[in-house]
Image (cartoon, rainbow, N blue to C red; front, side, top):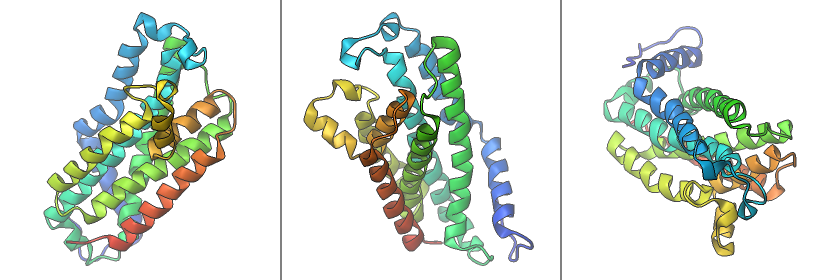
Length: 255
């Protein structure tokens, strides 16, 4: 557990980032859930015979083709709504944030460190998912790579901003876990984890379009198929990122 000194020489941000990175790597549970579980789901569901057959319901695509963007959204949701809020809220509960408040670090820097670490994990996991999908199940690589990068970047910031908001206000780890769980399941449903967006009724698809993960999956699927993401999907993700990011910084509590 990180115990700060009263004055942190040099770059306080860099020192905290290095310390938090080491702590993350020391916790195998975070690596298993954040990296191993999505890859396991891809291997299990992608191996099912029906998942490898093209379907008219999916616009001629296979289920496994649609599942790769959904799993990327799953990774973002796991990191943003489960791992990140619990870690930071536990720091608050144990008084670590109170001691951090005596250092040169501002709330925005504390949140930025968490954003940076979880972004790196998300990028690595997304690359692994896309790579495994391509090598094992012949899933097409993103046809519009710039569009895919923009979509993934906005989705990452939007979801992590929501997680940072929970972490900024939750009094303890239990409260953060509960809040994250309340958001995780409906957002993953709207992202198509249980019912692909292509098979959703129109009204449910409309709700999905304006949810952060629904917009993310739509944008990732568009760019994977070689198109530029729909503007509404990008705007929705940007709006979530701005609103929740600003709220997290403004409402952050040291204790």
